Length: 190
Length: 187
Image (cartoon, each protein chain N blue to C red):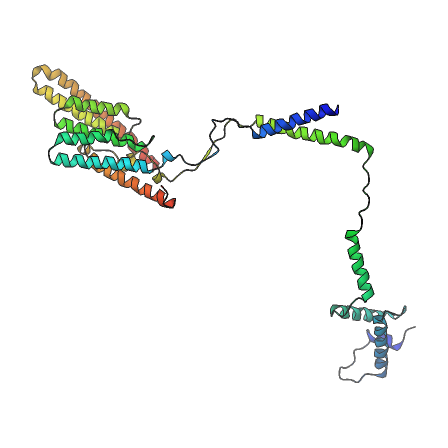
């Protein structure tokens, strides 16, 4: 009888040790975790922002010289910059670069390419922002430019021009909605 | 039998400048002898109530002045008694009853089992997930959308991306430097 009791007792003791030491879930997050390094402004983010800034300045110099092709090339390089994973600034910087690139293309009457640039930006955007709203504004300008071109083509393009103007209004409306929503949200936060 | 001197405590208080009366001198001499006998350990078994009260007061006064010392033999006896207590063998412990001796291991086993079972139950009933504590850095140190910095972009400034990136870079550089300084220069 004593042996049985001893064995039972040892079993319970072993179970206690196991219960106290066993890991509950290896994938469970630690209860004490410092801030995720990707959440804070780090050196990689500053390097990416600095690069974007320099490309913008370079593009501005080319635009001053009237070299729009070189300016476009400089702005396109911003789109290929590598930002830290999850950095919210990445979307904003790329969308702003796309807006500038589209404006450059509009100034050269490359409306389809400009629209493609804007559409890509809208499709890749992760969230609504003032930069997305700006892309819709530029999209509206592209529709307006298309309508003007259709008007200039003669009577055959009148109907299509009206559609383009409607599309422009829709794009501007979308931009206005985003701006209004974000502005009120930021005002509430303050 | 009461003597005329027995009213020394309750009688009239003499003038401080007055010469002592023979009765007072006799009483003082007798009381001095009484004190000497008391100090020598030969206190008379019988004395008047006033004398006993005075003797007690005199004893207390002498003791408070630190003049009361034990005789060497009495000192040694006190020290021996004080030392003997700790080194003396402890008295034999009373044996527990026979029934308690038999049940003690069972009580220990049962208590251990209960503790083990309670630990297992607590582990099984613990919450599945624990919300991790997360140190929140100041907002200006964090990577975040630039909306609040830039604000709505007017149509006339749709292509002013260069100005906006300058503002964004300057703002984030401030946060980066503040964080770095707070960490003692560590990136």
